[in-house]
Image (cartoon, rainbow, N blue to C red; front, top):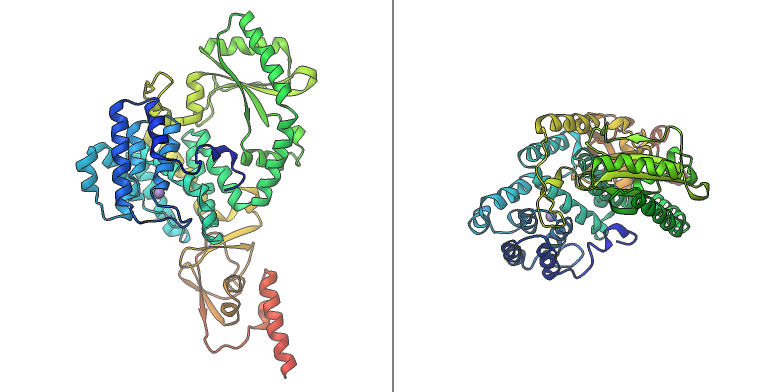
Length: 492
Ligand code: MN
């Protein structure tokens, strides 16, 4: 996929098992590496002869997804299960065989992913059912979701070879379901990737526009930020504050897009297009560093946020401050400890992340029942209320489904006639009725987001009903109806 800079180095073409092994070796034990190698050989044999839509052999997909998680230094058992995640569903090899070879823990992960199956977007009802399955799996073992995210991110990255409708469906589902779950689990990097990749497929023009705006902004700022970071580094040292790392962090595209929309597209009103991240040893150092920054540069009023004292609902911790920096330019600083930093990037997955010393971080207390109840409320609430989806660019659009689960993109209030013409002119001309979510409706019924629509045809029908012109919403339908009706008149 062009233009997806964030994942290009992770999903490089021709990635091999050697790359994966080298990566796992950097934090895992030799036994871990042996299991990873064995799982690769096992999966490759099982998928032998299978290819993906793009033509490459199937094993490339689980390999790439596993590599993605290894890059995050995830627990080797998760990496192994990711290599095996499509084996039970797509091949003749059973879970029993996997269990014999890889033991109960890895098998239970693969089983969890397999149980979720390949979610299909087919009308709201069945969809909510699928979602419930997802929450059950998540509650049983959150690691299943981590694998699912990697699977989905690689699928989104390689969507180009799929037909447009299917791309739209997968991207929409990722944007609406997967990204909010990742967000709720505090997995900021993954949430950003899911959103940006989906954004690309759903609204490519907007994506490219924002990408260009961000690039132009950043190219003018690189040298300036280097200078700022240098000054701060020196000043922290002078004050005896141990600084682990200072780096610039650019805002993810979809999140920048949302902000730009709110700020009438004035990039100069967005203060965190690139933020300076300051990573320190202790919480006390964070407050000390805040003092140092405020002594160097004057803070903007009302822009100091202490998420250490008051974490965000998803657990996010940091201190943010926006200052009139060097030459009066406005710069945002994000101050945090290494532990907060890992938690921000990996969220609940931080628990399975190995640090630089190859040590697995201690488990975090997560009250699953409460967490899950909240996530369910949030996501399912949104699903049953698909009508007023809050995301701006869906406002004038609805997405409805064919009985096969394909997504059709229509303007607000479109009718079954619009839907029929969108699929095929012949279907429009011959349509005589419609079933929406398994109920018969009249052809002027406005469709709603998430409806599943089935068109009933009258085989001998010759021309569309001119009355439809009063209710259709698409130009395509209007033109077809007019043409057919006019031809009829001329012939007479
Ligand atoms: Mn997969």
